[in-house]
Structures are given as C-alpha cells and as structure tokens.
Amino acid sequence: MGSVRWAFPCAAWRPCRQEWLLAARLVQPEEKDRIGQFVFARDAKAALAGRLLMRKLIAEKLCIPWNEIHLQRTSKGKPFLANNVLSICSNYNFNVSHQGDYAVLAAEPELQVGIDIMKTNLPGISLCHSDGQDYCSSSIPNFFHIMKRQFTETEWSVIKSMSNEWMQLDMFHRHWALKESFLKAIGVGIGFNLQRIEFNVSPLQLEIGKVYKKTKMLLDGDEEEEWTFEETRLDDHHHIAVALGKQEGFVQKHSDVCSMEPNQPQFTLLTFEDLVASGIPVAPEDSAYWDNFCSKLESPVKQNSLSRQDCL
View 1 (cartoon, rainbow, N blue to C red):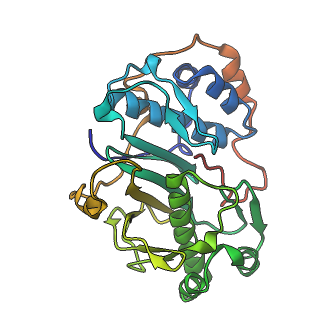
View 2: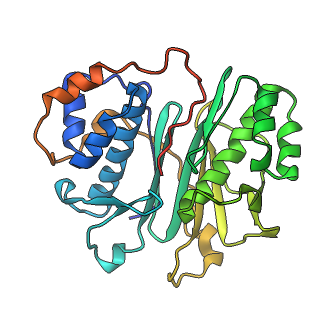
C-alpha cells in the first residue's frame, strides 16, 4: 500500500453501450440507481467514475475482491468501506471528488485525506458548497460579492491582488478547493463557518503537473501544523487540493506527516480500461440503463461552465 493519486477524464469519456452497461454492473445496485437519476449525462458519468475509482482502489490496494466490496456513507455523506479488514489496513483512508472535466481520488495508508477539484472557466459562474447551497452569478464582481462571507479579509486580499479577473477567479477556486478538501477530510459540511479557516497560499503561481506542499492553514487564527495540503494544477483550468491530517487514535507522531511520503505523488491519468481492469460484476446487465443514459442531455443547454457537482 502507499499513497495513491488518480484522475479520470470523465467529461471526455463517450461510453459506448458495452462500456456503460459494464460500468453499471460494477457498482452496488443502490449506487447505480442513484446515478441513473441524474438529469445530465456529464453528472452521471462523473458520479459513476467516482464509484469505480473507489472500488478499483479497494480491490487493488486492499486485495478485497471487487464483487465483495461494500461501500456505505457516513451521516455526512462521506463514503467509507464497510467490510471488515485486517488491522494493517484499518487506517487506510480515501476520498474522491468530481467537477469540471475530471473525477479524482486520493488515498493514504496512515492519514486522514480529503480531496477537491475545481475548474476555472468563463463566463457564467455557479458553485455548490458542501452545505448543499448554490451560489450563482453572471459576473465575477457580483459573484465575489455573493461569496464574501466564505473567505477572510486576508484571503480576499490575495484573490483580488491578481492582475486580471481571470486570474482572480482562478485564485478564488484555488482557495475554494483548499477549504473543501479540509472539510471533506474531517467529514463536515453544513454549519461549518468557512471564515474559521484561512489559507496562506504559496507559491502564488503553480506549474502544471507539479505537486506543492507549502500552503499553510490557520484554524481560528492559529496555524495548524498537524495538517498538510498538497496542491496540483492538473492543467490550465483545474486545481486539485489534497488535505492530509492525523487520524484519530493513530499513534504516528504527526510531525512526520510531511516525511511519510518523500516522493510527492503526482496524479496518474487513467483510461476506462484502467478503471475497470480488476472489475467483477456485482449485478446482472440492465439494458434499460443504457436507454436511460441515452435519453439524457450531456449538460444544460445554457451551460454554466463552472457548475458544481461534487461528491464527498
């Protein structure tokens, strides 16, 4: 086992009938039904990819046969493995996110982990926070006004110090991904005051493909040394943040968090074949599921290119 960082380009995936029906057979029936209820194909693809990423991880890293994996959700909606596992695997933690063009997964053998991906794009802005509330606006200044309470004055000063509106929006989404990654790692959403957490991002510019760990977080004004944040710019439009923290009851001294993974893991881009390579069907084929998928529009006709459909 070890650190895992995977990304699947779900927006570019154009499944044929065989692929879609196979993928549907590889997830639990209740998840298949939930995914089938999405209005748009892009959201169904992203959600299905997220489930497949988790099952691939568990099958290949924890050596649990694919068709014996049982995933459940916490009361806050965070997926977890319900199977009994060996004590050596009991601290293995994983999280997924999907937004924009990718579904992504991060996993750690000894740390709490939360991941969030955000896509920056123009025009139209629509964002959904983990509390389930949508924030929408047709212009960047108005959008920032609506979101004013979600960031501290220090964070806003960094965001608005960028030289143009595009770069400001890009920095906004970088901060948003960082906050969401932390909330997902600790498993909270509704009711958490985002101004309690403040990020001092470093460096200001991220190169595509590199992994950075210099950004620091303040919680209630105090720097949190027990949390590390990995940042990756997957491409020109997508920021990924991975929050890494000590698991409750785990004896490893958290001062060693940064040294646990000396080779900072980069994201591996997976194909559909990679995604299902170890798959064993858990349900019979349902031909109506393909018909259901084909009846969906890919995305809204008037698409808000920054619309948010993320999973915990």
